[in-house]
Length: 158
Image 1 (cartoon, rainbow, N blue to C red):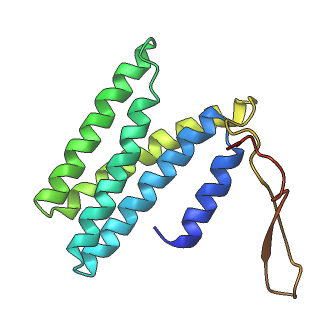
Image 2 (cartoon, rainbow, N blue to C red; image 1 turned 90 degrees about the vertical axis):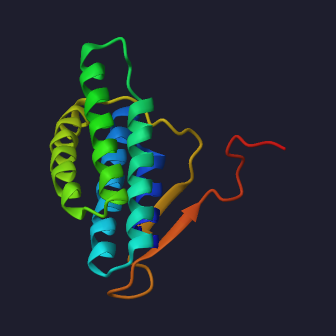
């Protein structure tokens, strides 16, 4: 995952509620799997396996977020375990063709969660996060990001 994507995800996470966090996890899995396919095409098998492992880590977070008191959680749990098995096989046996079907299924689930997230009006999970403003401040085509409230107490005391 490139530095810009990490920054984008960090910004999204600071503003996300619980449902949006799930959508972000789906996006992260998809980015890692796209990076794995790219690495495979470039014959960088170490990077290929690393990206698959990071994608599986995100799926683990999706598993941890399930509320098992609901029936749908059991179905999603089975799907997530299936995805992990397929990705493990793709990494061990170097079968990149197993990744695309997993990505397709993940995209469909992500679309469902996006619809749910659009209806979720709950507050962001993170409190006391830095406020970030972006704007064209130094020229016609240059975008600069600045952080505000850097000197304030964000809830961390030593």
